[in-house]
Image (cartoon, rainbow, N blue to C red; front, top):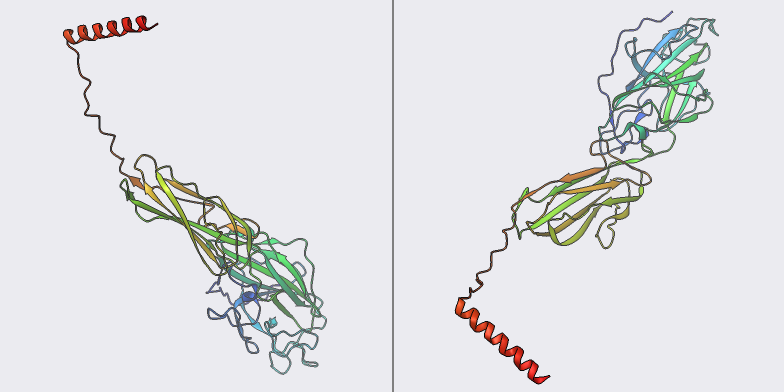
Length: 380
């Protein structure tokens, strides 16, 4: 039997980037207002803004329930069971049965809701979070390190409908943490935890395993390339800028940038500027260069030179993201520009004409050469 509940759809899906801490997904908190990264705890039996729940009374639970099931807003618990762990950054969610006194009470002794305890048929309570993934995040780097607890027990977890295996169940006296690092997709994602409940209290809690930990195992690094003009004349100064930006909280080491000098540029000069905790290599060029990219930082390299007008000004920069980095999905690993240029004029022809010899001149020249030869023989 499936308990009938009014249909509900999560109206506001949070957008998570690699700068989002996993704690944004903690249960029972109000979502923080940026730039804050942690929310405040909700009151008792308050609707969670991003978690929903769905309940079944069955021996064969859905694995998992579809997004079309009768999901309802998940709510914080009423009176807590004394065995439930408490935290400053998360609260338990619960289906919210009415007790014999009418209170939305989960475990106050003597106030069980009207059903057999233990129940001959188990309840399965499913808890769901949905979020959008920021477009620059490659789904392969999403890794949610979550601690979870359940009453009676968390028995399964599903990422976009795929059961996570291996999976360690967790009860209500201690938490287990698992790194959910597969099955994520671009755009909207769904994470569902299923709990079993054979009577008395029912609840679920999830929180970040480590405070301040990002949702990603690596930081996306974007690469952009610009030229200060789209067209150049010979003799003009051309300036190219390539910018690398870390879009995550994880530090990347051994990052490399290759940026060959365009064939049509002479007298090249390199410079570099940094933001955040990044440090420019010294000297800034020539390329390639290897350096580190701390989380939430950027490096900009500029190349200036004189346009010769005799070869291409096309320029392609290539990023190798190193350890702890990954090329941003929005830019990939390369960036290029292709300014046009006016060809330099061809060298002017010489004005010195070769003189022509008349027959008389040729006769005189032949006589002079003959006299020169006769004098050489006389001196030998």
